[in-house]
Length: 206
Image (tube, rainbow, N blue to C red; front, side, top):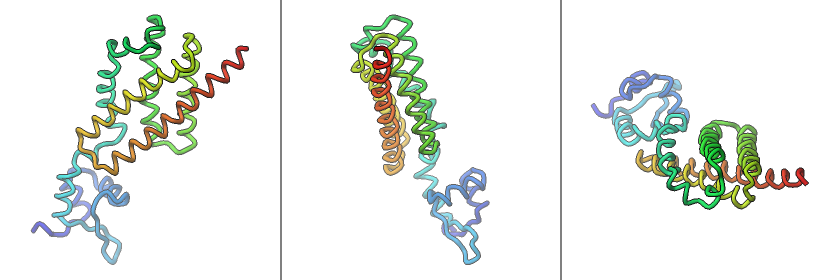
């Protein structure tokens, strides 16, 4: 009984999702699937049950679905007390501090957009966020070292939060590793843009 063959619709019913979702997971290689000679998808109940048990939570780990939980964790990292310990933060007035805390959102949402964007869009997103951090640092008279420290503070808070959320959700290592690689690639691009922009703004003001 456990090895009975299921159609795509049957598998969708067992998993509690729409058939198009099962089709997508199958095409991406996320779900065990077999093809008949006629090209129809068939699923073994035992494989589907095992997959559902091990992947029920991890298959839902998409940036747009996890962002709120990640942001909640980030807020714990960027509490006022922890920020107060940062040397660059101590140099800012209250208006500037609010701007930096609000600016952190662009980093979080930028990462979410990056994961689903093509390379050209991702590069543009990273450049824009780097420019934002550099121009803000200039506006509040922070050095390029402090500008970088401010960005790294928020980047590390984001990365720590993603690691925690993914760890709690028991995301499979390959999927988690892919996400971490994307995070580092995206944030590295932002840091390079930040430093380049800071330097170019300095030349423009001379």
